Every structure is written in C-alpha cells, then in structure tokens.
Length: 48
Image (tube, rainbow, N blue to C red; front, side, top):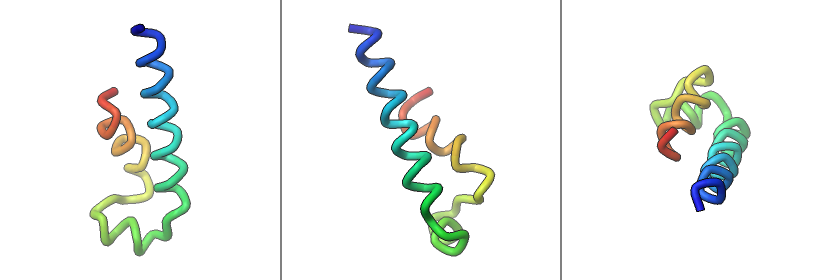
C-alpha cells in the first residue's frame, strides 16, 4: 500500500509541476508563485 501511495503522490507532483509550468509569469505572480518556486510548491502540495 505504501508503494501505491508513493507512486500516486509522485504522479500528483509531476501533474502539479506540469500545470504550473504551463502558466505565464503573470499568472504565477497572481498566485504568489515565482517561476523558480514551482517544484517547491508542488512538493508542498503533495506532502513531500
């Protein structure tokens, strides 16, 4: 079960990174996220 949860979290992390990566700098700024913070924000979102 732990492996399944880890894989699911990894999938959610990659999806979050991809979605945020498609946003323009202005859209990210509106959310209070800098381009360089995308991976950190994604890790926090899935609990890594």
